[in-house]
Length: 99
Image (cartoon, rainbow, N blue to C red; front, side, top):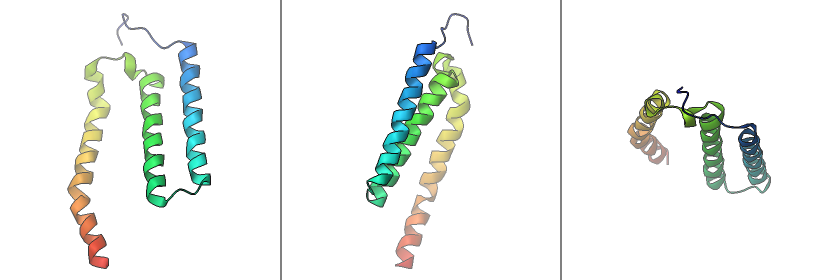
């Protein structure tokens, strides 16, 4: 990390902690309201991704790192998405074949 970059302050950490708590309460509320399964899965995955991004940016200090450092977590994410989309036709075929 370069010394020219500033780190997050304690106030910013508390704000992020508050947002993480709010997102967690929203997830619990979504389960309690018994949303349809598909909507619930999409909502939970969206809030989980939001929380993961907040944690990576502030608590892992990625917000203050160089762009080159973003390649380390970025490459596995891209590969994972490629694998998901590469296997998606097989998943659809399996679902339609069982029907």
